[in-house]
Structures are given as structure tokens and as C-alpha cells.
Length: 253
Ligand code: MF3
Ligand code: CO
Image: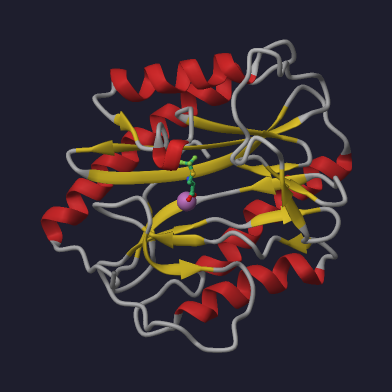
């Protein structure tokens, strides 16, 4: 599949779908505290999505069994919600969720603190978030995809963090995963030229240790090989004639 350019109708639909996802995250953020299970978070997330008129796009995607990915501490992404996984003070949890509204997909992720967390963990969350913003300084028509990738990776690596290499961001629209793939580190080629109307899910995944990851036996959960902490920050953005629009960022963030 090639990279899709959205027309003004489609851009409106993408704004709507991704705006609804902001509300899902506002609701989920409020639930994060010691004692809550990742199962409860997923249940609440699915209800929020459906109450807003959306359809969860992760549920049954390649067999994934939930609507919200819940990844705790050394889990990088795609953690599977479980009644047995109870959040504890000091944990960090990455939530990744998306929905389909009127045929258009949204996708975002945040890492939250559970109660009071270590400075190491908070710094990781902050660097991961900031690496996204460093990247999207280059999310402008006429620049190339690798300008974004390079900026994300350099920001995190210069600060001594591991930049996960086995997973990447992606185009998004009528499908959750469209071209192009968007790695979070410098590539050997400059990649596609960015154009107005492209909608991209940019999602740095960063660890306090090595970038090496492995998959747990559940076939989904990605963990750091050295079991160092990992964080994830993702927004769906729109390339415009000027500044990129961050479709999944709510004003209070
Ligand atoms: N949201 C993920 C991404 O950023 C995809 C989730 S995989 C799923 O690409 F299986 F959980 F849906
Ligand atoms: Co994504």
C-alpha cells in the first residue's frame, strides 16, 4: 500500500475520530492508581470508546484480545490486560488505545505514573514525551520522513536512553497501519517527502537501558531484554502547510 493523502473531508473525519480518543485518555488517566487492575483499565477504555460512538480498533486486531494495551514497567508495548495484574505504587504504565469513528482510525499512547514514582522513571517518561516533540519539529511539508526519525532518536540517545528499534510508528487513516513505517531512529535513506494531508502516528518507545526487546510467551507483550523500564508516547498528527496538527493531544496536556 502507498502513502495516502487525506482530502478535506477525510481530514475532518480524522480530527473527529482522534478528538474522541482524547476523551478516552482523559477518562483512563483518572483511573491510574495503586490497586487497580489492568483488566479494569481495559474494560473502562472499551466502554469509553463505545459510549463515544467509536469501535475499538485494537480488539481482535491480528487476534489481540483487548481494546487497550496495558504495559507495565519493563513492558514496552502490547501488554495484555489481566485481572491478576494489579498496579502498585511506583509502577509506570503505558496505555495504548485507538478507535474507529465513521471509518477513520485514531491511535495514541501515554505512560502514566502510579502514585509516587522514582526520579529515574519520571525522567524516562519526560524524555520519551519530549522526543516526540523534538521529532515533530520536522513534521513539515517538504521535509523528509527521516528528519523526524533522526530527531527523535538523537534526543533520546544523547541522553543515554535506549531507542526501541523493533517497533515503529506508521501512517494511519482508513486503516490503523498505513504506509509509511516510521522508525524512531536515523535511517540510511531520507524516506518519503512529507506532504499536507498525510496523517501519521508517531510513537517513540524508549528504555532506561538497552534497546533490545523480546516477546513474552503470550505472543504479544514486548519487554526490554535487560528488564529496564520502558515508556511509550504516541500521537496521531496531520501534516499541513505549516505547523503539524496533533490530533490526539488534548488542551489540558
Ligand atoms: N497501537 C498500536 C500501534 O501503535 C497497535 C496495537 S497492536 C494491537 O501501532 F494489536 F494491540 F492492536
Ligand atoms: Co500506533
